[in-house]
Amino acid sequence: RDDQTLVALVHPSEVLAAEGEDFQASTFRLLIADLGAEGPDPSKVRAVEIDDFQPNWLGYATWSIRLSPNGRWAAISGYEKVGERQEVDPDTGAQESVDVLEITTAIIDVEEAKAFARVRSAGPVAFTPDSGTMVGFRYEPTGDSTRTLLVFTDLPSLQETVVEVPYLYPVYYVTPGGDMVVTYGAFGSGEDDHVLITSLDTGESTTTTGPSLHLNEFVVTPDGATIVAAYEGGLYRLGVYDAEAVALRDASYGAENVNLLPDGDTLLVSRQQGQG
Image (cartoon, rainbow, N blue to C red; front, side, top):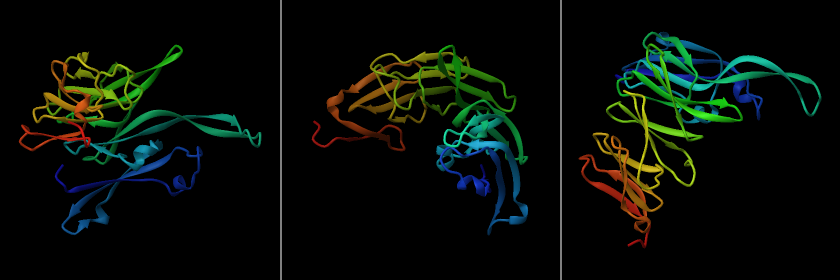
């Protein structure tokens, strides 16, 4: 928040020695260091232990720590050990103990340098601009299938609100005003791709109308009210508050990337060479 605090996630040495599926839950540590003019003071480093934890390994290499905008909360997503079960090694026939893991996000209070809570939510998580809500997701079995739930966790009360989404791998972002969450599928949701927009004030969700649209490449206006996306060569405008998608250019336009100048009024589009 003030560029004066450094946080780092530290793993036990034996974690990197594991191979294949032999990773086991371990105790990780979040180090919190205050930065002075000459860098962190080793004598003032605070450590918070995260027990029985296995990180999301993709996340560990990319987005392992998510910090709230106000700098108070650090969120580390992965799996929590909730027990053990016995399995037979197919090669040796010997019994071996295997960790039973559940999706979790560990929340650390950076200001107090202590573990705050664990919630049933996968990451990477997002925070509202006021740091009052954390957004993640989880899977829940329903009969013979599994549904995907978007999880809104109020901080610090930990009150939870869930919204079902039609995506196996949801991607989401919170609008600058902090009142809407835009969710789409990392790999689309099928032949008919649409975006889900959820109000954090009411908990109600709306599926976008208009042409099929997948947000692989998009930009948001400074007021957060409009999304402009490049999708399969076309260029589209999506209203966040009316959930209406409109085609600005069709696929023949060849749009590949899109961005806005800082004034928010000028759109930059890169196009495939040779497109009219």
